[in-house]
Amino acid sequence: MTDSLPSSEAKQARASEAADRAFRWLTAAMALAVLVILGATGFSMFWGGRLAFQTFGLHFIVSTDWDAVSHQFGALIPIYGTLVTAAISLIIGVPASFGIAFTLTETAPRWLRQPLSVAVELLASIPSIIYGMWGLFVFAPFMAADIEPWLNDHLANAPVLSTLFTGPPIGIGMLTAGIILGIMIIPFISSVMWTVFNAVPPQLKESAIALGATRSEVMMKVTLPYTRNAVVGAIFLGLGRALGETMAVTFVLGNAHEFAKSLLMPGNSIAAVIANEFTEADSPIYTSSLIALGFLLFVVTFIVLAIARLFLYRLGRIEGARP
Amino acid sequence: MNLLVLRRKLFDAVMIALSLGATAFTLFWLAWILWTTVTQGASALKLSIFTQMTPPPGSDGGLLNAFFGSFMMVVLGVVIATPIGVLAAIYLAEYKRGTRVAGVIGFVNDILLSAPSIVIGLFIYELLVLPFGHFSGYAGGVALAMIMLPIVVRSSAVALELVPPETREAALALGLPRWKVTLSVIARAARPGIITGLLLGVARISGETAPLLFTALNNQYWTANPGAPMANIPVVIFQYAMSPYDNWHALAWAGAFIVMLFVLTLGIITRVVFRQGARS
Image (tube, rainbow over all chains, first blue to last red; front, side, top):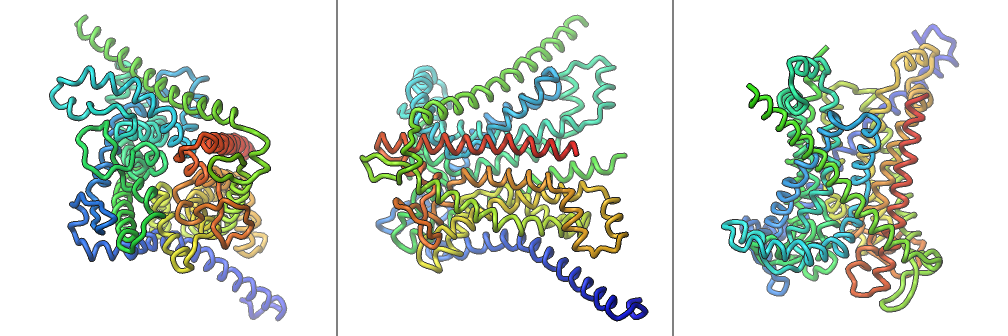
């Protein structure tokens, strides 16, 4: 077709085709960069941690050692702290998020819904370092002065709770860190929840209401079953955040490398150890052990976040399939 | 029969009350954190914060070098993340919409979106600090760009997909080449959404601390050279808050207050831009 055009126009058409192809390749390269970044991040953690993995092998994951002088490092204490604080955060964050989503979709007056959701989203935009500072200077002293003495007084004789919730009331510790994490993940979980609750077809809810269902019954028997996948996805999303959060917990965990049964005792988490000790690491094996911890964190959060996205995408597909 | 009705009504009332309680519980923490930051920060605010450098222990000073360093690194992050992010979004939304390739890249992007920022910090340390043998403002800026990139990709792709297909067809029918249609017609139509993403990204990276700890580190003195370690507000807040000195604590609160004010203002601007985009 270009042959029949005058030569200058043909040249122009060819140039514009070349520009089109170049532009397309440019955008493709940038999109590929997203994949490369994730892959390179994982690989660089693995590469940086290889000395620790070679030296300690699988023992690294089950060892409680953390001795910078004799060069013995193990990840069990930080792993334990990460899991415990994340578990506490879910226990607080999930019910609170569900309550907010229920209020926002079913019971709050319409004029209040917008400001309420903006307020909850504000929690997500506060930088984590501010949570950390507030935790260190305000919340930890409050825990030490008011909450922890009360726990010590009232739970001393309870069977399991006494091990978990009694101890020195110092404010800094796994319970404090877990509570702060719980507050931090609320906006992430609740915003997904109320988005999907709002997306439930009104006919389904109206049918249930017509049969005489209360608002709670509509939620538990219609909305929740309909959006189950997305709700699970939202919880995993919050878990991913809680596992990887750094600054907020670094301030209030206490950077302790001893195993403690009590949640009131200082502990550690993977992210907090790295933040606290990375610039002070004075031997290759020390640095490598910290990067190896980063690799473990990367792998675990990758899996958790991938599960979250799979659950959320499944919902998207079901909704897309509906007319 | 009556008992059943009573039980159902009771369950309903309890659940509504608990949910209201959960909402109040969340707002209570929000108010507490905001209140602490505002009162502590406002009482620590002085003019010298904007005119003096970060002080050695025990003496007075300001945060000027840290503000400047943060500004430089955020600008660097935006300059790197914006073109990459928007072009990647164009590939996903314009060339590969609905395909498996777009699905996989979008999936990976969503994972990066909530990946732990400390891991990004370690990655940039391995990439840009270790080979050069010293911490630098460049490394800090690149680390911030990594955090910002997935936000830009996500919101730009969504904005581009919302442009009506007729717009594209009309522009193509005029005989414009595809790249020109994409950049000057479709990207322009999607501009409010793209800008929203950029603002969200800036808000996110201006408070990020973890990725800067091992990349930009800190610098007690004024430097405009990003090739050297560079002071920045988040790391200064971290180090000063962890210190035992009261005047350092006050500076940390002042820094935290200003960062929070900045982030919340950006949030409001984002909403306004987004609403204008939705109206037009």
